[in-house]
Each structure stands twice: as C-alpha cells, then as structure tokens.
Image (cartoon, rainbow, N blue to C red; front, side):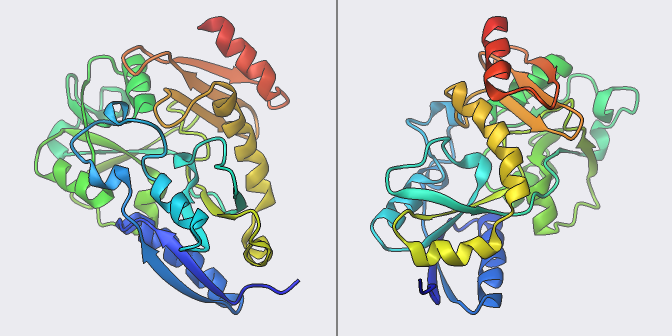
Length: 294
C-alpha cells in the first residue's frame, strides 16, 4: 500500500487549534509528507455569546471540520479529543491519538482574589468564570460559596477577560495553557489535583481524524499513534459514551495508575458526586454504579 505524501489538515483558527495543527504538521513532515493547513470556522467559533448548554445539537467545535473531511476538502482533522462525540460520524475514524499532556485543570486568579486559608487559595465568594457543565458541578460540590459566571472565547481571550477584572478567577485546561507557553507571571496559578477536580475524559490528548476509506493517510498516521494513551482514554470515553454524554454532560473521568476517578452530576446546577473505582473495574461496572447513585 502506498502512503500519502501530501496531506491537507482542517483546523479551527484559534491559537490553540493552530498550535495543535502545527504540532501534527511537523510530525508528518518528519515522515516525508508535505502538509497544508485549511482553517475552518465552526459553530462554537461563530457563537460566542451563549453558554454551551444553550447551543443546539452537538459537535460545536467539530461538525464543520468533519463535513470538510467527508466532502474530501481536507484529509485530516486535529481535535482536542475531549471535544469529539463518543461515536464517529459514518465514514470517519480516529486513526491516531497523541501523547497526553497534563490533564489537570488550571485555576488562574488575580492577586487580589487570593486567600491562602481557603481551598485553592481563592477568597470566599469570588467570581469564577467557566461555561463547562462539569466544572460548574464540581465547583458547586467543592466551593459552593463561589459565584459562577459564563466564560467563552479562546484561551488568550479568556485570560484577557480575567486580567480586565471581569472575574476574580477562571478555570482552563492546563494542557492548552502549557502548549501555548503563555506568560502568566502577573496572575496567581494553581494546578488542581485531577483525582479531586476530575478532568474531562481524554483531556490533554489530540485526536487525529480521517476518512475510513483513506487508507494511505491512515497508514501515515500509524507512525504518530500512542497506543498506551489510546487504551487509557478508551476507558474514560467509554464511561462518557455509556452515560450517553457529550460536552454538556457534567462528567469527569480520570484513569490513574492506582484508581479510576469519576465526578458526576445530573446537571451543572447540582453539586457533583465523587467516586473512586479500582483500576480493574470495567466501564459497565462503573456506569452501573453511577446509574444506581443517580
């Protein structure tokens, strides 16, 4: 089988999406491919004034890119794996996954909001920005005194809103901030323990998506695949799929060497419950327990 030597990557235009696309581009070029990037605007990019639970449908950051794949306008899409639906559209597949960056959450706060006596070092009654249902439910469980406000935009935009004083603190995925190597020296930062503030399934991993029948691209992507990471996130996303969830489901799953940690709620407005399972627990056993507790 011949392998493809020219690959078109479809990507969103945000700083983080472009970092991810260039990261994969460099790996492909190291494997003797030529690569071009095509920027595609998604629903999540166009609509910035609504929280995720107000947006219709699923795949806010992926659908338009997936359509471009299906229409043979691009050959490869590089996604934050946590943004992908748990079932692939007909004709598409995840051909490879990246290494895993730190899956933890990063709390950023203005200096005036610090209080070392409180959990996370954040003052009582502080305003914290996030649009994630999972993060909201966990905050309600661990720091119910905090005032949660909606926060949208790409990573630099969110940080800029914090600096302008729109919030006392914000929550971001540590992986994205780390990859962009942003200067946060004027802010106080706290990396939150993923066994307590449980991240989204597959947080910190890139998913490389292509057409199922594009065997030449699939062959190239085999060289970029991390099977050890794939096994871990298959468990995490397996729970998400069995719970019939997507980005809007308040569910965190983190597979660690010693245990599987889960945070789950029926709604972003209800405090999350926390569970610790033995590493040998199956997805079915975890879901049965969560369902019984709901």
